[in-house]
Length: 139
Image (cartoon, rainbow, N blue to C red; front, side, top):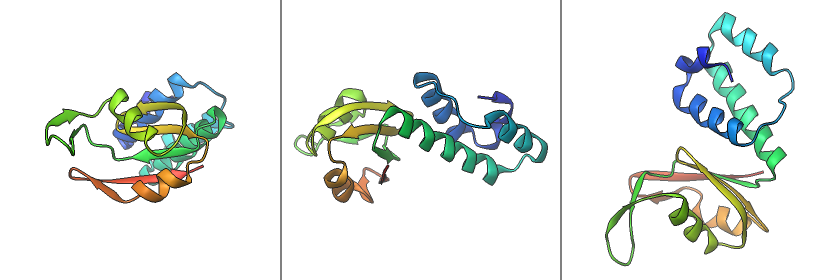
């Protein structure tokens, strides 16, 4: 990815860049799209391109559910203790909604491969976790 465009959408750029590094693939006409965005410095076009790249990588790697806006910290329901939300905590939570084939957590976004993502999507889409509203999308 081209770091010279990071200033247009730093959070999205970093997340998609990390996803791209972990799961490399060939996105069609990436260089052409980036050159056009460099010329116009158009934020909506860049964020749209990042979303398309993210969706492309998700399909290529076999993930079928994306969960966005996961907080850095959350409170345990049983103990009311605040803890960091990390890989193991997310995996344990996601296992409650079905069989997780594989999973990745990148900058507050979880990419999941379920046998059937529908139950998880129906239960947690638009659910509040701390101060954050979790959003999910099935691919």
